Length: 62
Image (cartoon, rainbow, N blue to C red; front, side, top):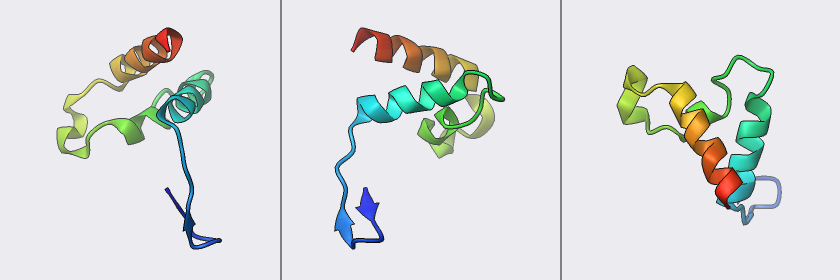
């Protein structure tokens, strides 16, 4: 990820990002940060609630 303030790269980890994404989901509209992970070419043909469940399972397994 590019850190625009420093003009440098910032290392991010998928597991941390996924954990934050599912944490934000609880108590919200259900389509917050998980939606950003879904390939845009799928458009509305992918159920976001399924992506959220799969991400939660993946985070729990790791």
